[in-house]
Amino acid sequence: MRQPTRQLFLSRGAGLFDALIALAILSFGLLAITRFQGRMVAQSTETQSRQTASQLAGELLSTVLVDVGSAACYTLPQSGACSNAAAVTRTTEWADRVAASLPGTVTRTATLTSATGRFQVLITWTGKETNDQHTLDVTTDVRP
Image (cartoon, rainbow, N blue to C red):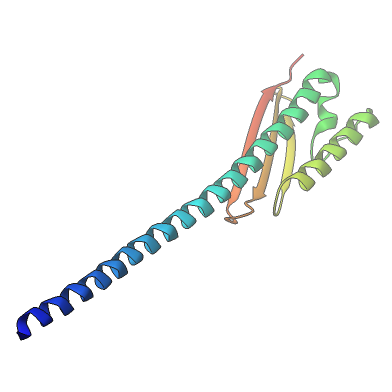
């Protein structure tokens, strides 16, 4: 008579044990999904910063291509004398927009190599989520 009672008790405990194991597996799965979602949000933020930097660099390059005669006036930091005050103002405003649009510590340089006619824009910023250093380097030919 003792044997059936013991079996009944063990079968009830096994159901509780199965429920605890299922709950643990579910908890680990939900934790993994939460972690994955956090990484996706961080990656999305980094992608948005890279796109913003690319658009801003393209904006300065396009401005220089329209005003090739004053290409030296669009350099950062300003190198040499420049007779086009509007170009210097546009470049300063562009540099301010870059600093305001990108997260972290932002550096921006624009150089003109007059021997080759190459105009290079270099933007560096610190990632918002990961604190990694990101760099965008874009070059174009501005020879008339």
